[in-house]
Image 1 (cartoon, rainbow, N blue to C red):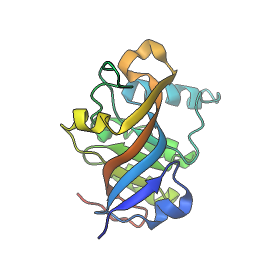
Image 2 (cartoon, rainbow, N blue to C red):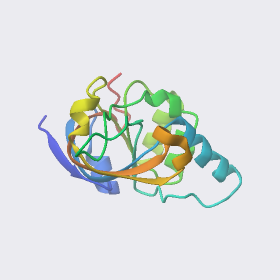
Image 3 (tube, rainbow, N blue to C red):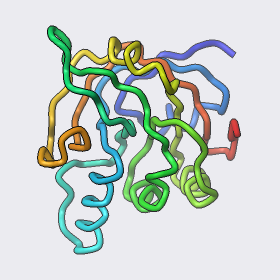
Image 4 (tube, helix red, strand yellow):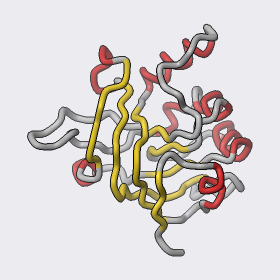
Amino acid sequence: MSDKIINLPLDAETAKSLKAGEYVYLNGEMYVARDAAHKRLMELIEEKKELPINIKGETIYYMGPSPEREGRPIGSAGPTTAGRMDKYTPTLLDMGLRGMVGKGKRSPEVLEAIKRNGAVYFAAVGGAGALLSKRITESEIICYEDLGAEAIRRIKVENFPVIVVADHNGGYMY
């Protein structure tokens, strides 16, 4: 299989074209959110309130960055274990989230929601946060600044390397 270059946000056709095992380079903007931010989003959903971000067609990178370095928009930017977001993910996928970047296995419920919604789960290499940060050209806190490293950010990436781990056809690397 050859490497693919994908522009974000992901459109439905592109997401459905991806197959587990493919190497992909992401270009464009995606959100960063971890456990605490997901919990707050879920509270808003349960209260039937508007979310501070529009997740339709978007990709969320499960990452908690270290403080930015001089001359760089962000510090180390390695992936967080995706399974920690599994209790929130099916709901977000059903609301239109199309892609996720993290590391590690996903629950059967998340894999089913990926298939149901034509979504995709990518893995970034754990332990390579310093290298991955060099692929991030912009970083801006969007909301939940009080959460520090767990605030929701919008980042811009160029040739951000990931592997398709779970696809909408049920393909799964684990």
